[in-house]
Amino acid sequence: MSIRLHADVGLADAAREHLAGGADRLGFFLADVDGSVFRLREWRPIDIAALEYVSDGHTVLNDGAAVEVIRWAHQCDASLVEVHSHGQFGPAAFSPIDVVGLAEWVPAVRWRLRGAPYAAAVTAADTVDAWAWIGATAEPAQVDAVVVGTDVIRTTGATLERIHAQLRL
Image 1 (cartoon, rainbow, N blue to C red):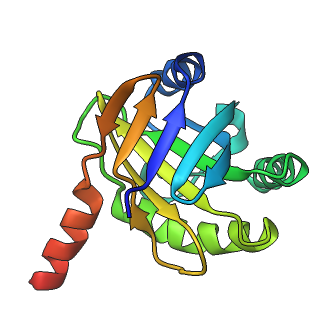
Image 2 (cartoon, rainbow, N blue to C red):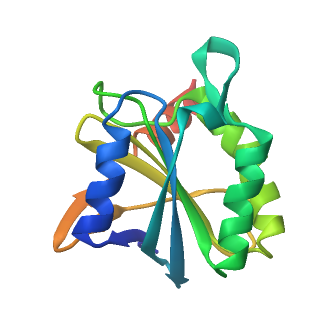
């Protein structure tokens, strides 16, 4: 199954501008999901004041911001797509801390949004890696591409490659 995130150019540019501010910049899109296509419809950048720093320089949403983002999606009857930046050093891949955080965060958010699909993406330089949770599975699936206007940006797939390489050791 090919999973894609679709955004119009203006929406993608707003996200890129926020994420270009440095590593650990974060924001969320509302999305309508049709099968395996996430159609991004609104962007909400997260202010640095809404982040809490935890071990190893990793950041997470504070409780108030988390509640607000989930409420926003619920009130708009939409799925969420989170995007954060790892700065200018690519290729993009979720860090091991990101993977653990997503394993804790995604099931709780999907439960609150009545099983709505969820996607997460990480950017680094001009690259992106992304996962999606669709259907009843608790495991993420690789997002194949981000489509901005008519441009198709292939994801790196670097995170799953790293995880599979570690399993082979």
